[in-house]
Length: 115
Length: 113
Image (cartoon, rainbow over all chains, first blue to last red; front, side, top):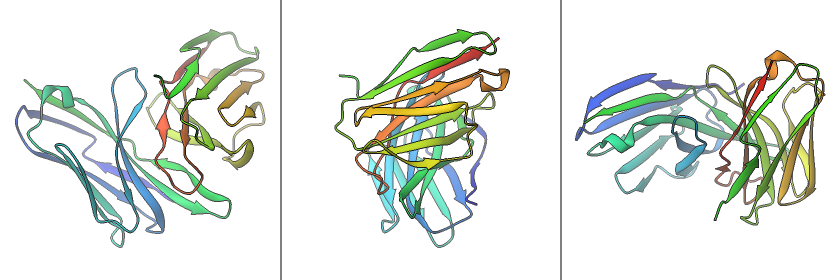
């Protein structure tokens, strides 16, 4: 059964720093991996989707990498801003006989960027 | 324009009642999902529908019954509500079941008293 772990569980850094959030998964036979952010009391916002054949994806100050064989992904946030404060969730999609499974989520990294 | 919408946003009800949560997506997607986020903020897949057909049912009590009247809607009906059903329920959609990017609704916070 797929398990997704995110480290650290919480992180607080001063504004302007570059930071890395880590995600690991136990079963490397994934379809893709998706990073989300969740603001308090809100839904999930998709940040980046990396297909299993890809190594990384970039969007603005965000860069996500995927090492499928070792079961790891990182989310790199450059020049952090207070508006980046949120919970960041990593989720993997497995393939099943009927098509893709739903996403299996980690428990998230709660990020606080201090002004 | 809202891509994935859910109603209601908040739902407070008594144990034993039956309630429904509605979800609609205007993205033209074929696949829709229901996820449950528990009190510890852990998100878990409940159901997945592709083109109105159930493709995933993840060991959810049969008190939970999803219904998809058309591709754009996936409603969640819950019978005989229990205290443990209190959670935030998220609807999501994707282009297809083949591992496409999933887009989430704002969530429905269900509180069972």
